[in-house]
Image (tube, rainbow, N blue to C red; front, side, top):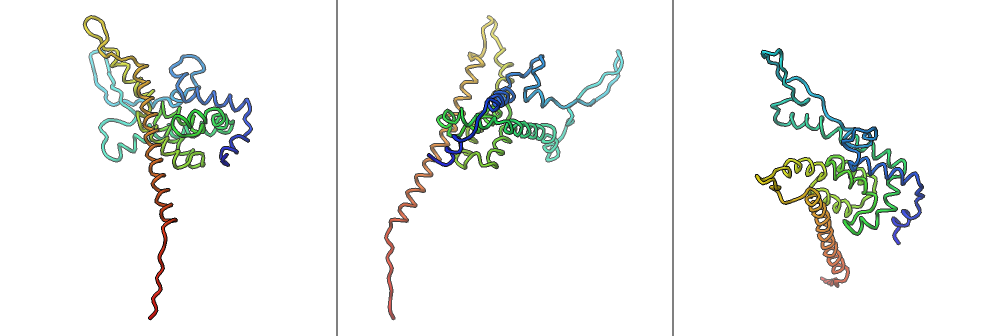
Length: 252
């Protein structure tokens, strides 16, 4: 048994750790999203909120003054400045909120509970420990949040180089499928023919399942690539160690 596995087995996982893990899963999974009840504050996207709007155009009509609202970033931007404004308004708040919340959940033992419960499952499926559970759940809903949590796991040493590659491959395939696919497919799947039948012969659940399977396949392709590279390096190292060295001494 490796030292890493021994350390995981010795961790003191209490009932509070499991409660923290459950709350973290609810927070990053989107279960409480869009709810009008008080527990909607437990959702990541709800706390993220949205930027306020500013008036972009004012016109006079017969009924009075009419205003056209625009986004907080403004319209007509271009170049590096527009990209910087996008980062300020969308990416930075999501990353900061995700990293702050994962620190809170980690303090109360959520990552220890995840390691204890989910390491065997995630190691089998995509080759990463249970520590990556919250980052995995976050990346299904937010690309930026999943990337931020993964970077935090890397910096803390919770994930090795090989595990980082496996997990990155998992995230790269169909990033944020719950947010992107569910949001955009809702409009497409609503199309219908003249007889009332659906135009797209696909349900939302089926499409989401295909995306999740593709993410697992992508992670395992990366596992095979890294395994092949490791085998080649091992063969090369072994051949260098076993090859005889001829030493010739010439006398003048």
